[in-house]
Image (cartoon, rainbow, N blue to C red; front, top):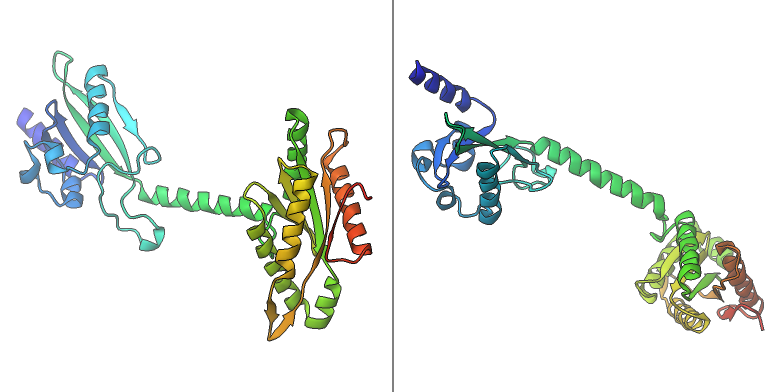
Length: 315
């Protein structure tokens, strides 16, 4: 009867769509079901009685042994999800390559097997194929990241959009108040941009905005925060910088845009910008006040010749 039960149990285990194998205390394989044989390419006759580490030298030996030893010592089952470790064995999967996953994602369960006296003399390990779940979750996470990025980014220029850029400016002003930091703000827009649209067309105007945005990103520091404020107006948050540093960056931006060689459908389009610079003051009631100060300097730059920068307060 016991032999019949053992044979029946092995028969059932072999037909499970789950990997099942048993290890003794010396890490030798005592049972190896058909799932494991099919996916590993190693038949039962090759693995039975042999060390799992000799059979699979690519196994994370230190991690795996620690996991198994804890089950032997604590006599409790343990579980590892694919999110913690994508797989134990680098098995192939039968999903389309477009899933972007090279190996089968696996959930692993470690179950202590006790003898009649309650001692653990072996461990049963199951391998569940959760590749479909893993692919679905990865696609969902990628979609959420894309949605989050699109909610913060201006579609045409790929700079921060106005709402998120203003949020960053508000946060920077609060940081300055709390820690006594310095920060300056540059607001600028393109000179005579309406003429660009009227003369060359709106598609040409879009290309000008893209080229200006690219030049802007290449000119500022990594710590500076750039955004499209609206239409042809842009803003640059210059963190940890006083008015003089902001003026220096404004001049570099002016030069880099003036030197652009923008050609659309064979026509060269000259572009210049006017800029306003203001430094954050701790008594400013809000970030809107800082924008208003930089805008006032910007308008002064336009009124006094364009293709230049001016600072607040106006001399």
